[in-house]
Length: 250
Image (cartoon, rainbow, N blue to C red; front, side, top):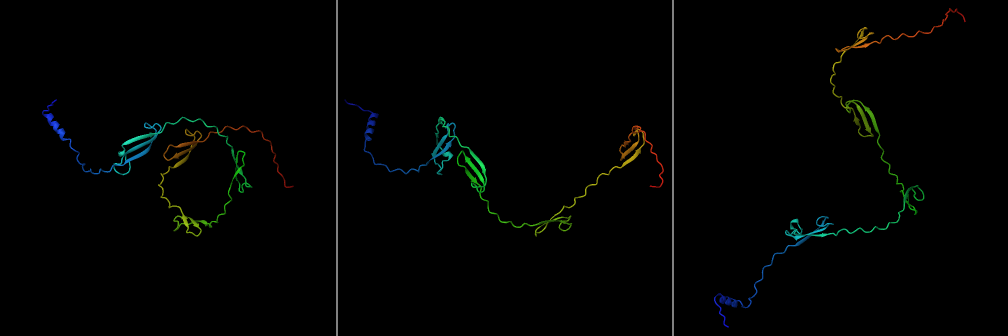
């Protein structure tokens, strides 16, 4: 069978036949790439909430873009949560413990158990324990002699302008305690009013008379006498007492 190839098909056949040559030599190697960035991780506690119902750990990761070996907030690219499991069911109650023993504390007088006295601790029926007072400490050194204090009146002068008291501690420089300077004179008081007392005859102001008090130019005040008292009751009849001259004699 004879096949005729015309036009573009003939050109395609020639191009395919031309690409079937042997492989050429390897090209030169490429340049080294820039160093890669470190991957940093950070873990923080995650409180119970929407991410972890019972709490857990939040793990953040990302590339150290600024090279400070710290995972900054802006460098976090991935966040993963590792959550705690839900609380388990409550366990059964444990068996009751043995009854405790009473503890009694009583004062312990000075004696064989405590030379200087103390406290006795009695736990149940066991052997008592003693907590004893320590021995008295050594006497302290005598203190330095004190200084006498003398207080005497101080007359007005250079030390106390208006007089006062002189305080003398031992041989120290005396101290003076005195009153302050007299205060300024007070302002004059208002003039008083004269008071006149005159007898008041019996009349409209005083039925049985009395006294009239006149303060300055004010309205006079009357102080009336009281009325006559009621007549007294008659006395009982008296007895006769004879009086006779007595001549000189025994």
